[in-house]
Length: 385
Ligand code: PMP
Figure 1 (spheres, helix red, strand yellow):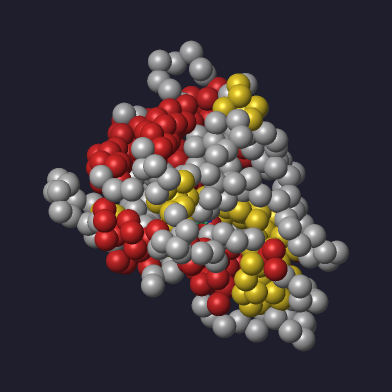
Figure 2 (cartoon, rainbow, N blue to C red):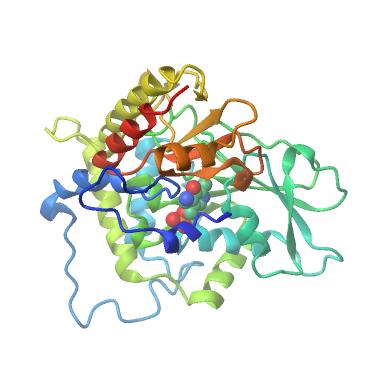
């Protein structure tokens, strides 16, 4: 089995430019290529030119607690959260990392104490993002250890609960489930953006994680950020990034600042002829979900998809549907969903066991290019009951 999100990056065949009828197509990874046509249309508004003598220093703002955070990115992140209303970022510490992946590692370090007799237990309610167990176990740290499904966690002692909302893989809205005094939590809000889910409230947890990858599709820039209330925790995250990479690429930070700035500008000037990114993303995602549900309905119960409640979105001012970044397919009892999709449709997906649940489930990415998505639906619709 290939449990890690990232293992698919190395295993990934490059997306074929022409899709032949017998090729195997990979829907196991969440590479957000659906946004490419949107950004192609932006032309020079997102262009960045850097000269040879620019951005040379390690330092971005020596006076800031997060001394490697570019002030331009700091402002662009705070502005976008204000515009979207999805998270409280004012009067909070913002720490940038090399993707939210590095920031997650930094948080495990920051939330566990060196003096503890035993490693802190790290849990998440199943189905959980398949990289959490791998990332937690990778260095066999004495500070923390993976302790599995939060729903079954009954061990005494310190713990960290990771809450992903909307959840990867199943798109559900999540809250902490352990709720023990002294417990700590990491709220991974990678998908809490209007193209994926109604923005029902302004999130204001002690520790929140966001990523440029899923917000805008720029996964290759490797920018993620944590929003933190407590100064001592923020300082420990900074220390981790300092020791593991002495900061984060300034070119990437400036590119992220430019792109986030364009999004905020478009959202604040709705008279423009162009759609803002969230309208575009929501339109594409909702059309994809509609088509997928039609195909699944015709499978006569071979496949089932979760249903999501409609809710009031404070960003759009309308009741909207959830359009999760992944489809969480369930097969008939006794079937191995991942194997069925591979053997019958030549579609590679990630099976339920990677996410801590049964093999009747498999996760299919909804973030590929248009051509790949239509091709996948065609394959899926050929499956016999
Ligand atoms: N958290 C979740 C829930 C994710 O789905 C992903 C990407 N698959 C990440 C974190 C990692 O994001 P990044 O590209 O910023 O490392």
